[in-house]
Length: 220
Ligand SMILES: C[S@@+](CC[C@H](N)C(=O)[O-])C[C@H]1O[C@@H](n2cnc3c(N)ncnc32)[C@H](O)[C@@H]1O
Image (cartoon, rainbow, N blue to C red; front, side):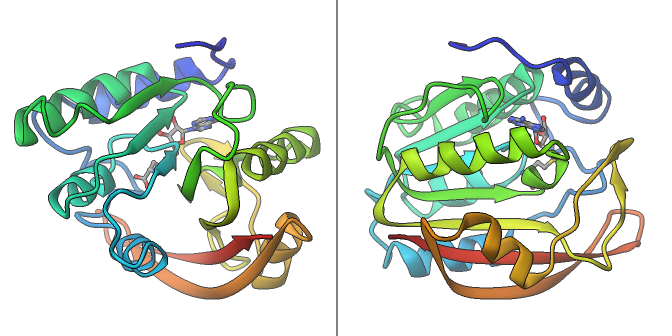
């Protein structure tokens, strides 16, 4: 915890106190999926299966992405979230499931991704599912892009999933930004070059469908 938490950390802590726990999965939250299939597909593709790849999951929450990456042999994971509660639950779950040795190279960072001091060119892959779209303030968005520019090595990649234009306007009692394919690519240009994009329809645990836009971009 090397940065002040922003004012919304109490909100997210409360969400994970209510819905998460160290033993199980946060299956009560709308963004829950048993597996982040598209993210896993792209991470394996972009790293060409190199399990030494350095991967940051921005706003990891209690998602199963880290479980699935550890199960595939990836070890150099940076798990970052505004909520220290989510990180504590996730850490307990991963250590119980995989053992402390398998988690020895995992870094845990509680804080605001736009403010934390992250390693320069420290990552081969920057993954964000359903976090960027909460940044409704242009200054915050600019700080996010600058952070990604600084931290992804040249030739490294972003995988960003936000709500699409026909996705919901709010999530977790917060307004969100919705992005078209072109808008999401433009946000990260010219420092990142879009190499692929796709839509995903996420079905929430209560059966509602939500449209996501996914950008894959390469750091120039
Ligand atoms: C909708 S959840 C998505 C969680 C996870 N990525 C997933 O797909 O299951 C959004 C997450 O972003 C985190 N978050 C929100 N704003 C953040 C910020 N500025 N910096 C870091 N994390 C943030 C929240 O605590 C929450 O865990």
